[in-house]
Amino acid sequence: MKSRILFKSLLTLTALAGIGLTGVRAVDKEDGEDKDQSRLESLAKVSKAEAEKAARAKAPNGKLIDSEIEEEDEKVVWSFEFSGPDSKDKTEVKVDAVTGKVVKIEVESPDDETDGTEEND
Image 1 (cartoon, rainbow, N blue to C red):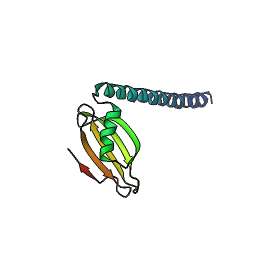
Image 2 (image 1 turned 180 degrees about the horizontal axis):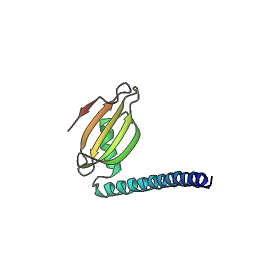
Image 3 (image 1 turned 120 degrees about the horizontal axis):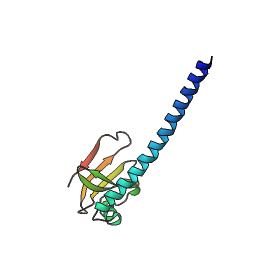
Image 4 (image 1 turned 90 degrees about the vertical axis):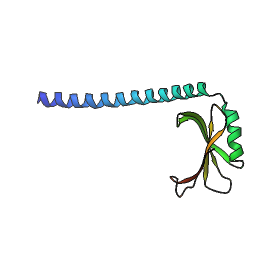
């Protein structure tokens, strides 16, 4: 009887420890993402505002719904996502964070978000 109680107690402690460790990893991951964002921003020669201006020129009537700095194809890019005024399509414009040039434009429709048209400069 004592061994069953001991066994159940150990199982409970193991489960609780696992839950606690999962929470710690989630916090560490968020801290890592913040550090990565800061690192990428420090590499950028073009400000977010300047990059947004270049992106808006490619989606002039779009409403900005998301933006971030990221690493893509070994380049640091500012990424801007716009929704169209008369359409449910989303346009993602990527601007090189070093040169300020638009490097990619993707249009995604809600019907098929995996296929889109791309324009690479």
